[in-house]
Image 1 (spheres, rainbow, N blue to C red):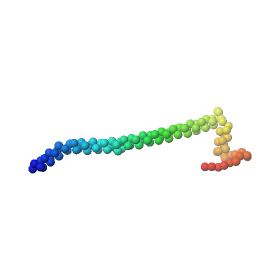
Image 2: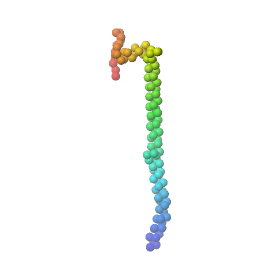
Image 3: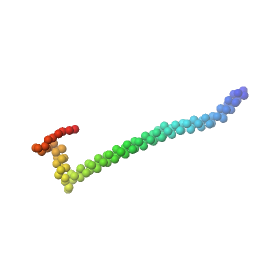
Image 4: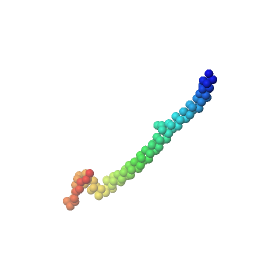
Length: 103
């Protein structure tokens, strides 16, 4: 009877530290691997950097297109741009020009 009493006594006294250790382990794991953990945060930061770079490229392309549009403004018409667009849209060329089609 003293052996079972001693085992029960030690189990009761070690149950709280074991449960505490398990709780700390559980929360530590989810702090690193969870949906909102460290690795998820790093992955999101990487995606943000990628999308920021894509935004910069899109803004550069937008400014290029805006410059081309300004050249076709009726108040300040650039004849070279008008000629280029007419040739592109209508498929026209001069008699002394060679046309090369590419995709």
